[in-house]
Length: 296
Image (cartoon, rainbow, N blue to C red; front, side, top):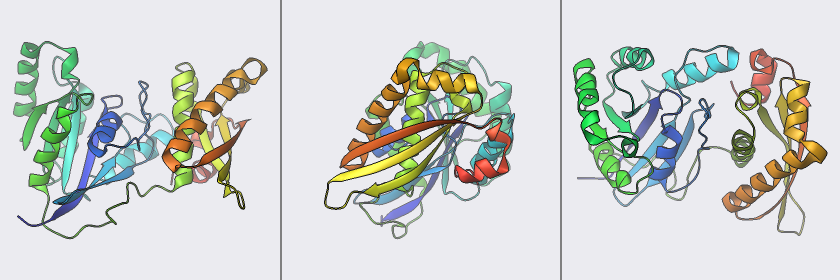
């Protein structure tokens, strides 16, 4: 068997563990993770190269019913990948007793493409094994999947199991990217996502979905091993701005400290990070703001 290379989309409803799986398969933290739905907003390409293959994973936003232009962009971004890839990893949750309406809609969309689909039933570590059998049977009746594999994206053995199945579906061919390349995302975009991840972790349910981050300055200091980064955090209400900043600026300092540490680990250099919080009402329905923040 010769060298194989290809593109693989990771799809599923919000919060089923797509980004956790991606980080496990790549061995690097590229996609941000949170227990809040709709964490991923863009399709992120992450590259895994071995002696035998190169797999370009495309982590897509969770498929959901959009409530604004940002949500509409996210769903279109996810669906547009399905015809462009060599294989699809479709994640569902093991705790589901049967196929819900959201997954039923996804299956109908998958039936419209010829791309082979691997179904991964994720989070099996949270349920009793016998409870999986009716769910496996329901999905096997709903669509002709290449394989149905119970997994946990938190367990190391999942990586080899899933990678072996993916490689079987890839065509023989040369690599698309240099072997040392991990992602197609610019460094400033990765930093924006890191900042947004910290907001998701530290702040309550409602606010993070109305937050956007834009890096406005990204420059290495002359003669110093220091990267200076300035970023704006946009929120939709003045009351949200106060919460993000916190009493005496404490919350913003926590966000900045955690984001700086992860940015230094990712970029391999010291980082000076400066954050500002600004209010832009209903920015998720503003074509201009969506374009400014990279959602095109």
